[in-house]
Length: 253
Image (cartoon, rainbow, N blue to C red; front, side, top):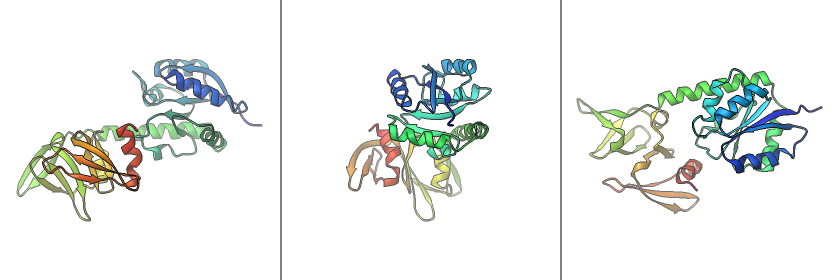
């Protein structure tokens, strides 16, 4: 006999809550919706009062985000994240304990979540979620870079990030493209990506751009884009296909 999960939906958008309720009604042997909440504060209250087995949780909510709400809980139920944003690292959620749904959620995708629920124990779910939150908190702490130190001969130069239009990599080095000139650094793009603030976006395996320098974006063949930067050289960058999802999220399409 399948377990029926006492479920709470936590989302600040009424249409999203209503849509999800209707979808869950297709799985009466799996979900019993016992409450809905409009934000993280109300969500915390209902979780602590009703003790659900599972919650569908939005991430970007006013005042208290989904992540912050989870950190406040003494006991964390099974979590299925449900959000319109995919800029969070999906790999962080690819465990057998949780799922990550992008809005608008479809019935077929929800069926995959139902199948996934059969694969894990509640205890393991809680442990993995806590580890995920710890990892995300660590990454947020790392992303505090406000300037970059580069070498020029025997001198050390401190560049403000707002002076940097982009980073590019070849087989051996990473180049920093600033207002004044270019510099070589030893960091890899992956190391930079972990430390740079959110206005820096990786658009190619060899390029990270400062989105504040973007002048125009044009569609390019093979589902790619050409991005022109508003720097002295009017740099033109062709994006990589594997970065399309992050680029489209940033553009808002």
